[in-house]
Structures are given as structure tokens and as C-alpha cells.
Image 1: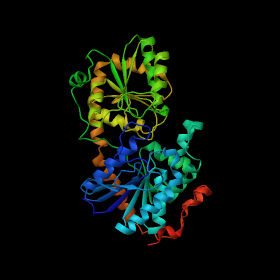
Image 2 (image 1 turned 180 degrees about the vertical axis):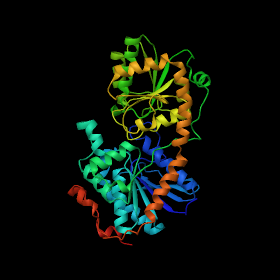
Image 3 (image 1 turned 30 degrees about the vertical axis):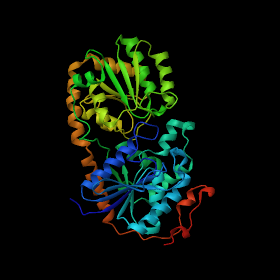
Image 4 (image 1 turned 135 degrees about the horizontal axis):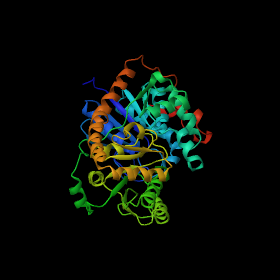
Length: 442
């Protein structure tokens, strides 16, 4: 056990208490929740600072021994799209700094996402607290794939470059993430540390496929695939649906696809517009195949969906890491994934599943046909998946490796604050420069 530390995790938009499966409820929420809990289990005192998006939320929520969630007053106490949150980060930083002065400072700040980095850098400049950052997604990569659909402000790129240059350490989630930081942001490789995401061993383990299908109402002789996660275009679920169509047209194989996720417990295109779009894709390009939208499901039920499926299919345009493949493998379910980002790190092609190009539905259909024609390989993939994920991707191991990064940072010469006046505002629009030294008056 390492020396006890007081750690502040900053997660501007992704609360560890939020419901998952919606537009802004996904992997970062899971990451922050489990990293915080595991660090607390290692004996540290951990506070997670996240923006208050409901007026009724208490300031402090005790989540576990040694772990709290702190709701920060920054902007309106209502849901705001993360693409519109950057102007509220100076207020967020001011609130956290005043909280630190009232309740005690932290040994280290761990920022999650680039906007949290704005907050962490301000805390370091005013209080001298070193900070580490995990980006979770990079603006240059997002713009490369989403182009005009990317609604984050252009300032994001400059902010990320500054965070990559000035953070005391940067945690990359996979080798591709590290490479992107080096090539797109000129990040110093000596301060980059690859620490992947993990899965919850208390929540996901092998469950009898027969039992899972009985509970969910599917027969054992039905070919069943599943996609679990946020329903947004970049997740490439339309590619999976088209692949299902090619499976039928080119290979004569029937299969059903369960699409689990959305902004409500019942599938509602009004609340989750992507359901409507994907339904139209299914009608046009997967005729004769079953595509079933389930709506959002609780974490407790997800293991049944993983276990019931022959495979998880996930073919996003890009993916910084991706936690659902780990959960699927923990349940003994192979993964057919796009050969991108963290997926090509977590999924071992031919051993725990298959990797396919991200925009190749006909090739995906071919891989699905190969998958269904080789039952012995599938059984081996199931065994390999459980072994791999438990050896490499537990949250306990993730927290241990992150803790080692913290210790390395704290072992260096401490940072000396250069000013009580924000330097971060230099990369924000003039109308967003709303902080002053008076904000930090005791």
C-alpha cells in the first residue's frame, strides 16, 4: 500500500453518479467512478469534482469509505451539452479553489477531459498543486472523423496542446492514444504513461448463456448479437446493421442484433433521435434481419445481455478506448470490433474476437459468417476472452498503475505558483475571460 494521498479527480461533465447510456453518459463516467473507488480502497482520500446539473443535488455525496462526489456550482443547475460547457470552466476552477481553501488542499489533481484540464491548470497556478490529465478523447482525432459534425469550439485544440505540454504527467489509455499525443500534439514521450481502462469484476463475470437467454426471452437456437453503449452516430451502429444485412444477402445467415442504450428505459426516437435513424437504416439495408432496440438498461442487467449474445459487435469510427468490450470479454463473450484506437489493443484478433475496418459492412458480414461457421474457434475465443481481460484490464490493476504515476509526479520537485491571475484565459475567447485575482480572496 502506498502512502496516503489527498486526490482531487476533476470530471467536468461526466459524473460518477450519472445514469449511463445517454448522449453524455458513457465510458468517462465509468472510468472516474471506478478509479476513484479503487484509489480510495488503496487508502487514499478521493474527492470527485463534477458540475452540478440539478438544483436539488447536495454539495457533497459520500459514495464509499474515502470517496466523495462534490457538486460544483458552475453555470446553470441544469443539463448542458458538454460542447457548450467551456465558458463555465473559469467559474468551476474558482469554486474548487475556494473549496480547497475552506476544506484543505490536495496533494494532486487528476483532470479528466480537456475542460477539466483548464480547471486543473488553474488550481496548480494558484495553489501549486501538481496535476495529471487523462484526455479520454482528443480534439484533433475527433475533428478528423467528425469534421463539421464536431461542435466543440476550435479553442479545444489549443487547450489540449497546452495541457499536453504543461501537465505534470499525461495518462494515455492505449498505445494509439500515446502515439496520437506524440504526433498530433508533440507531447513529450517521457511524461506519457499508458494505463488502460478496466472492468468491474464485481459486476461482470461468465453467466450461463442458457440462463441469460431464458431471462431475456430468447431461444438457444437463435443467432444473437449485441451492441451496448451510447447511441450517437460516431459509434457506427449503422455499420453493424449493414453488416447484418450482408450476412443475410451474401451468406444466407439469419441473426438478430440487440441495440442496448438510449436516453430512456423504453426505446423512444423522440428522446433518442439516433434510434429513429438506425431504424430507417435497418428497414433499408437489413431487411429480413431482426434489429431490436431495448432502450437503456441498468448496469446490473447488462451482464445478462452480454452473456446471452454470441458476440458483442462494436464498430465505431474511432474509439479512445472502449469499456464495453472488456465487460463482454469478462462475461465470456467474444468481441467483433473496429480495428481502431483502444479496440485494437483490448481485442486480440483471432483469439478473443475479430478486428475489422471501421467502415466496411460487407467485410463485417463476411467475418460474422466466419464466426458462425467455426464453433470450435468461438469456444476458444470465449475462454481466451475471460483470461485476457482478468490478466490485463481490472480496475484494481488500473488504479495501482495510476497510483504509481501519482507517486512519480509527487516525487519530483514541487511546482511553485507563478501567479494568482489565470493564464488559461489566454486560450479562451475574450468574452469567456471572467476570472480575476479577486475571485481568490480568502
